[in-house]
Amino acid sequence: MSHQWIIRVLGKEYGPVDFETLQEWKREGRLIPENPARADDDDLWSTAAEIPDLFDQSAVLPAAAQSIDVPRRSLAGILAETFRIYRKSFFSFVCLALLVVFPSACAQLANRWIDTTPTANADLRSLAAGAFAFCMFVLSIVLWPIYIAGIQILSAEALAGERIGFLATLNEAVKFWPRVAAVGLYVFVVYLLLTLFALWIAAMILLGATSPLVIFFALGLLVIQVWMFGRFFVNVLFWQQFAVLENLGVAESLRQSKNLARSGRELPWYRRPFWRGALIASIWMAFVLSITLGPQWSTLWRNFHSQWLIAQQYMSQTHTAQDLQALLEKLSAAEPARGFDASTFVFWILQKLLQPLLGIAFVVLYFESKRDHEPSDG
Image (cartoon, rainbow, N blue to C red):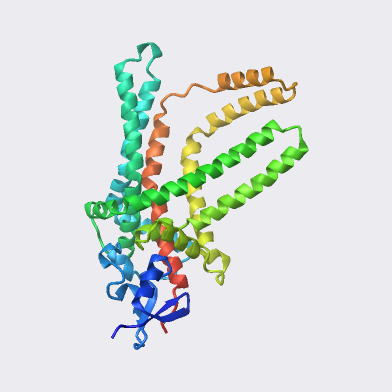
């Protein structure tokens, strides 16, 4: 006799339904392995992952992630757990980071070498260096999805108290390359379009600086752009975790990410997933800015001050095409020549080696958020 099944999602029970309906729900992304489930003639709840032949258990990675039971943590607790996981698997995380850091660093060094080569001496070596820099740049992009998937797998295993080696992590991460690349490309393109939209608004304000109507219209568009940017950030907050740890397809990963990020409306604001995600991302951005701009703050301030004085002088004069061309020439002349800065390069490498911390934090937040909204079996 074929079983009928009852599924529980966010405290609501659905069913009983047959196995074909369960397969349809799985394809639509409405049913994931962690959903509580039971047969209609059985009072014992388990999970949908245990329904025979419904999910490919070999594809649900990492296996330890299915049994993770995380305690409830504050934001400080999430950050503390992030550092603990990073320290526990430090070697593997550094090796994952080097997958993208090494080719990117090689590309930067090759470009610096080309920039310092006199134009008159440009020869076959410069062309070869340029080709090498381009190949290294492409390689870093190709390896990026493996790096993202590896962070998810390694973090989940460490959170479950399991140990997995770098090579084993790499072997599993490669399987997710097409999916992570597809979703990552979608996210990048949307962010790029939103950035270009913001630049277009800024150009509109500059070109219509003497028209209050244009400025008002541009500011309205800027408010819309900020709203769109924030909304999209929330919607894709957990796409990496659902694409890798839940083994969901592209559309399902984005849909489930949106649902989880917007859940928790019954919780205090500081415990809601999207607020915690925004705070974690803000902490990371503050750290990146501190190590990127901190060592060069005085130089940047002098350059900004000199260019601001030039721009003020231009604004006090009649605006003509010739004046604008002269302004651009002055700003270009005031900008100092950029050579190779060893300290900036070292701080960039440091930032990249520590970047897995951001991915680990979102994995911990992901399991914490699922724990907050997982229905009780009682």
